[in-house]
Image (cartoon, rainbow, N blue to C red):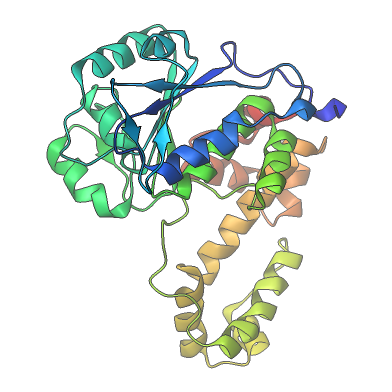
Length: 325
C-alpha cells in the first residue's frame, strides 16, 4: 500500500446502505462501487460495508432484480455512515421504525447521506431541518413544499453539512461519495477510487447540476478548446475576453454565447473555478506556503482567502489542515 494512502478514516468505518422495495438500483450500485468493493490497496482502515433492509418481504429493485440484505435496521445502529440511495417517491411515506433508527443513529454521531430522491428519507426523519441540502432538480420544488424548513440548494451537485450530506441526481452520488472519501482518506485515495471508476476525481459541489445545452456544433467545440486550454495552462496569467475570443476565432458576442452554452457559466467564473480547484489540489499535495500557492494560480493571499470563504466556507489553512495527506 502506498505510504501516501496510509491515512486513518473515520472512527466508525461501517457504511450501511438502506435497501427497500422499489430500490433505485443505480443509486444503490453507486454506493456499492464507492464503499462496498474490496480494496486491499487501501489498507485495513478502509470502509466496512453492509446493506440493511428497512422492511420485510422481497425487496425488488428497478430492473427486475431482488436484493438479499445483510440484515435489518439493527445494522443502522452499528453504522458510522448511513446512506439512503434514492427513495421510491417524494410522497411515499417513510416507515416510522426507519425514522426512529435514523434519529437514534444520528444522535449518537453517525453521518447520514442521501443520493438523489433519498433526501426525502432524511427529511422525513427531521435530519435536514434548518440545514442546507440538495436533490435532483426535478424534486426541488416538491422538497421545498413538503419541508419548508430546509434550505434547499437547487443548482449544486452536492452539499456537505458535516454530519449530513446530500447529492443531486443519480450520478452526483459519485461526486459526493468521492468527496467523502477525500474527506476521510485524503486526495490520493479519492483519486485511486476515481481512476478505477473511470470518472473525474473531483467535481466541486457548487458546480451546476446541468447546463442547458452542450456545445451545439462540433466545430465550435473545437474552436472553444484553445481558449479553455489557454486559461488552464496559465492560471496565473491575465486572460482578457478579447484574447480568448481571438483564440477561438469568434466575435465577442458569439464567443460569450457559445462559451456559456458549452460550460454553463461565463469565462470569468470558469477561470475562478479552475483557479480554486488548482489551489485546493496544491493545498492537499504541496508543501508550498499559502501565499506562494495563491500567486501560482493568479491570486494574492488575501484574494485566495476571500474566495475560499465565499465558495467553501473555510480558509486555505483550515482546508489544508483537513485534507492534506
